[in-house]
Length: 181
Image (tube, rainbow, N blue to C red; front, side, top):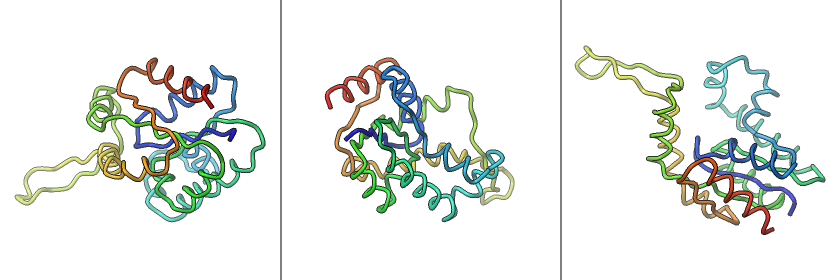
């Protein structure tokens, strides 16, 4: 098994830790979300939002995983949160290499996201009294939604990395896990 596939909820550290570990270990790094967006030639967050809920984006995620499965050399691969929940991708990942679940408490992920000052795409809807707008941050909703699927991530993973500390602590743990293989 020469590929290390990182799965988990949005903002748990898959891409950040994966990129840093790959740099430290001098391995190639691939991010399935970025590769799928690039292949689809999406222009920005609105395009990504429109396509992320459609079959085309999920199909492209699978296509990216299938291409990465053909790589001969070792690599670190960060997946989109939905990839591990797609049965055909999960099956492919198990054959490709070692699946590592980056587990971070949802309340920490949400706090980190809120403290970052970043805002995802915001939907607005009028509440029942038709006076006040309710704002729904789609990134927050995605974090909450995928956190409910944690049992599926755990079932797929060969290893779990508890990532509830700092970025440096998470990176050290990931490098240690990879080094043991």
